[in-house]
Image (cartoon, rainbow, N blue to C red; front, side, top):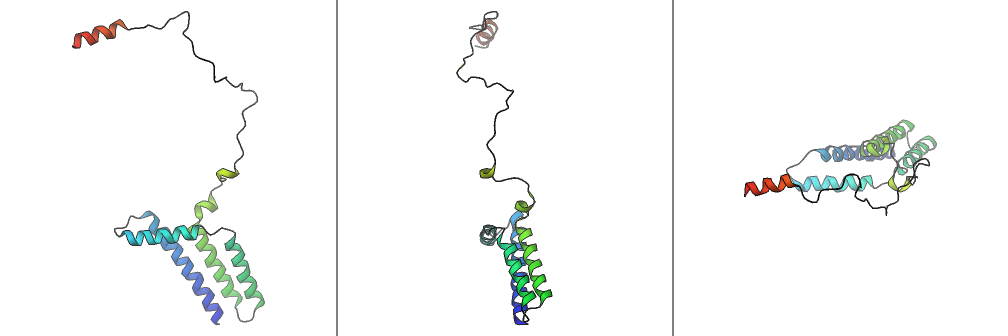
Length: 145
C-alpha cells in the first residue's frame, strides 16, 4: 500500500508542477521571483529527454504487474499521470513534425536550374545609357534654395 501511495504522490506532484510551470509561462507576473522560479523549473524539466518518460512508465507498469506490494491499477494511474505531465510540458516538441536543424538534410540545387556566376558584373546597357545627372531634379533643388 505504501509504494502505491508514494508512486501516485510523486506522479501527481510532477503533473501539478508541470501544469503550474506551463500556466506561468504565458502570464506576466508582478513578482519576478515567482516567475523566474517557475521558469527555471520549466527549463530544467524540459531538458529531460523524452525517451526517459516511456522508460519510466514501462518500469512502473512492469513493477506493478510483477510485484504483489504494488497495485497494477495504481501503477497504470501513475504512468498516465507521468505521460500527461510530459505531454503538457513538451507538447510543442511532441506535436510538431519539424526536425531539428542538425538533422535536416542539406538542400541541393535543382538540376534543371542553371547556377548564375557570382562574378558577373552588371554593365551599362548600350541602347539606353544611364543619365549622369537628372536636369529636372537639379532645377527643383535650385528653386528650393
